[in-house]
Image (cartoon, rainbow, N blue to C red; front, side):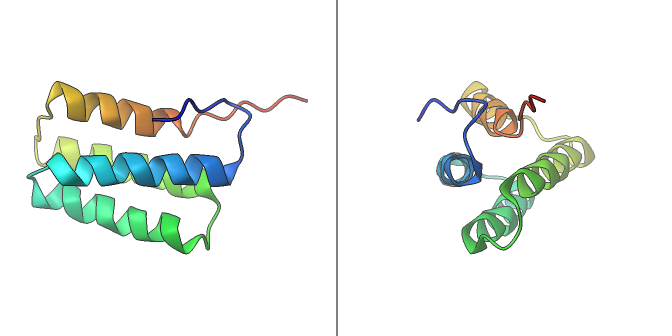
Length: 94
C-alpha cells in the first residue's frame, strides 16, 4: 500500500481506496458487506462524484452495516477498514 499524505488529491485517494476495497472483497465472506463495498467501488471507478464525499458515505454505510448485522472482522480486515477510513481525513489550511 502507498503512504497517503494528508495533502494528496482525490485521484490518489480514489486509487488507494479502490486497492483497499479490492483487498477487502477478496477475503470477506459476508454478502452484506461485499454488496456495500462493490457499490461504492463502482462509484469510485466512475469518478462522477468527489472522492472525499464517496469515502465519507462509504464509511457510514460500512459501519452501519457492521452494527446492524453484528458483523465481526478479523484483525487484518479491521486494519484495512481503518486504512480506508483514514483516506477521508483531509486537513484544510487557511
